[in-house]
Length: 81
Image 1 (cartoon, one colour):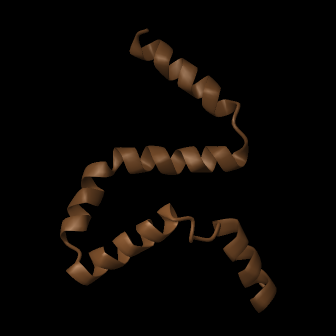
Image 2 (image 1 turned 90 degrees about the vertical axis):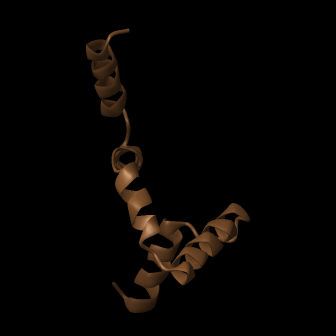
């Protein structure tokens, strides 16, 4: 399949997604596109910052994290937002 057909297929697939999945896909694509920039940013972090991020990732891997929607709902309830 040539790149033109790939682009057309991607656009059709994206067009069929619901809003939540479009936003998620956008984040994934932007992370992919900006991958080099993010790795350069990692190198500029302090060891304490890196350790904090790694701790958070490990907690998420162990299912100790909270869903974003759940956190936002709790904040809205607590602060009447």
